[in-house]
Length: 251
Ligand SMILES: [Zn+2]
Image (cartoon, rainbow, N blue to C red; front, side):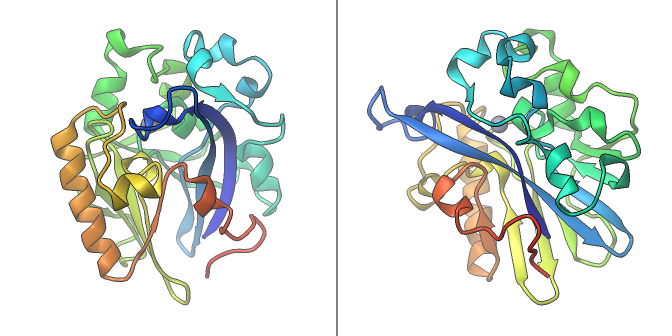
């Protein structure tokens, strides 16, 4: 497992921690996770589109006012893959944890991949009322085959990479449980747990789609964490500073 950057954003801390001061701004890392499995290369999330580094309004419209990219022009998954001597064509499977723009913004580059995404997430992304409100067709509506996930899926049927629905932030949010031979187990939670505080104190972000489902997902994540898996948050700067660099990896 290689952890690669998919960009960097700033937004109001209140979005994740409602009791934070109204003017407090936090910086969010955007992460993508590459698995070099013997049966194929799997990428969990594709981060932000490169164009938002220079002209976020063009792709994001008004959303660029509240979710502000603070990333260099090379801070995206396409550039990051070069650090591990891969190109987007080398990726066999892309898993999108959900279809918000900072998690699937680079899907268009993965032209050889099958795209795994939850059926309920596709349904909400297709809702015309939500176009431009976190969801953008330009991110996810491409000719590559989409495999619609509806429950738990063990991608290679060997327990190494298992997709787990963790709804609440969005209807189809899907986490990834990785069992690595030497480094142990990791649960990639994406925006089910944006910051560690959200899980530890069971604080529901203000951008939660369904509070009851997210609370249930917290319980499930804690259960898996207690069983020994490292819980990897979606946008926690403190935690991301402890990640190994792209060229290093978790084996
Ligand atoms: Zn999201």
